[in-house]
Structure formats: C-alpha cells, structure tokens
Image 1 (tube, rainbow over the protein chains, first blue to last red):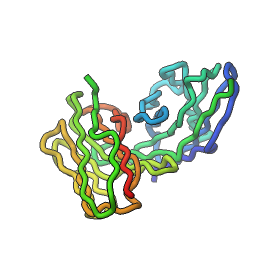
Image 2: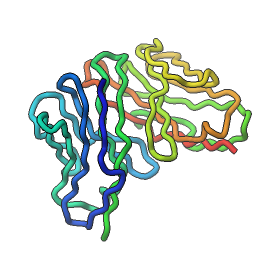
Image 3: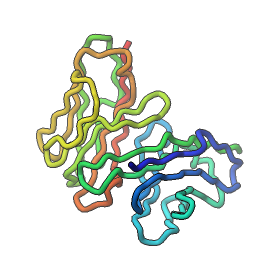
Length: 115
Length: 114
C-alpha cells in the first residue's frame, strides 16, 4: 500500500536561510508524488509534482524536490526562506492511478520563518 | 472567477441542526471531492464523485450525504450535527487525464458546532 511519512511536524528557520522539509514514501511501484502548501485560513495549493520524468522537480515560489528511489524520499527544499513561506506543507501520494484512487496526505509540516 | 468556490466560508451552529455546504468548480473538471481537515491539520477523504457518480465513499457516518447535481457541483449535507463534526471541510476537483493526485482546492468551509 502507498503511504507517506513527513518526518517533522514543525520546522523553524530564519529568513534567508535554506528550507528542508522531509518526506519518505512507501510504495510497491514507482509512484507519483506531490507537495502541497496551505497558507493560514486558505485552501491547499499544488507546489510541485513528480510523475516519473526528471527526478529533480521545480515548483512555484522557488521550491524544488528531488525524488530519490534508493532512499524512498521526496524532500522539499528552498535555498532561501521568505516570510511568505510560513505555511503548512503536505507530502502526497495517490494510492493508484484510476479516478477511484484515494489521494493520501502526509500529516503535514508547519514551516515557521524567524525574522 | 474563482476556480473552486465553496459557500459558506464559515458556519456556526448548534448540535442537532442540519447544515449544507455547497461547492462549484468552473474548471471543466469531472471529478470532485470532499475532504475533512481536523484541528491537527490532518486531511481525510470523505467522498469523491466522477461525472456525478459516487466513486469513493469512506467510512463516514450516514448523517453526511453528498449530492452532485452535475459535474460542476458537489454539495455536502450534514444531518443532526455533533460536536465532533467541527472541522474545516474542503472541496476539491481534478481534471480528466491529469496526474492522479493533482487536485484543485476551494478555500474551505469552517464548521463550528456548539
């Protein structure tokens, strides 16, 4: 069965420093993987997606993630944090590839940015 | 021209009441979802419709009844509200042929049951 584990419930960094949000996945086949962002009192927005093309995926707002099959990881990074990056981040994997497949969300990582 | 819109954004009601949340998408998508987000931000799928047909029905009390009058609309009706129903409810949609897992979310409807 597909699953994702977000290793940190809360990450705090200073503005201008790098961001690393960690996600490990479990899958019986090479999955699609996604990162979503949720700003306070807002809906979720797709940040980036991996669908078995290039392993390094670039997303919006300067974020990127690297699919590492050997480590079963899909960590989200950004070279320099901005105050507007403060939000909740979700790593996501679908349980399959049909319209009836469930989309499985990780437990979320809250990113705080210190001035 | 909001892509996925939900109404109302906030709902405060008493236990035992019945309430509805409406969702509309103008993206031309054919699959729509209801998710529940609890106070710890955990997201749980409740229902999914594809072209007005129910395709995912998670273990949700039958007090919750979704209805899809057409593929652009998915409403959620909740009977006999309980304290534990307090949460943020998100509607989402996905496009035909899109990557499974690529969802477009509304801004959420925060339900508070007193």
